[in-house]
Length: 239
Image (cartoon, rainbow, N blue to C red; front, side, top):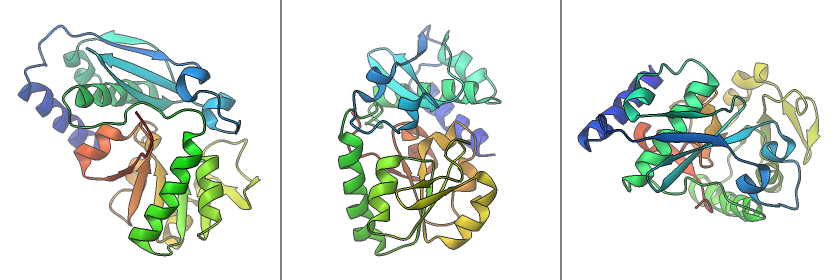
């Protein structure tokens, strides 16, 4: 249902702007670590460890990105992208990166390119302040291991964290036990605020975090999806 609505909204925009039948090519490629995030001092980001890849779609002169564990190349028209059923993480990464590039080209979203170097550290500090200003002192569920965010959030709030990476599950990071997906329901019942990676729209878990409790979806991946589906996004230093 979520993806049906999302694709319908995107199709409407494409048709409204006369782009559906044009022979516009969409290209996707896997970015290197340096291209994706630069050279941060911290080396425990999933993109640095090779657990995730960043696919990039180029539409005319604009770029849109999407994190995925199933990276690959795709080239075709917008009509072909819309015709693909979002059945795998690769299919959804093609769709989501394409949406990000097209909506950026149309001026409907910004910050579709991942920030670099020490920007994630600064972004995390700003996130803490934003949460304090808007939500007070909530119990925070961090969905998706983002090391800088976990460290900064834990300094101020009570935090529980859930991740899909088996190498992280059961480990203590910044004083927080990283829990596996089987703990998701319990963690969501416990928290007051969900802070979830936008990559959930690629791995199809985003519906677990929509409309239940207040939620912020962080990063570049969810730029178009959050815009179209009326969800709140946090991306302070993307470009």
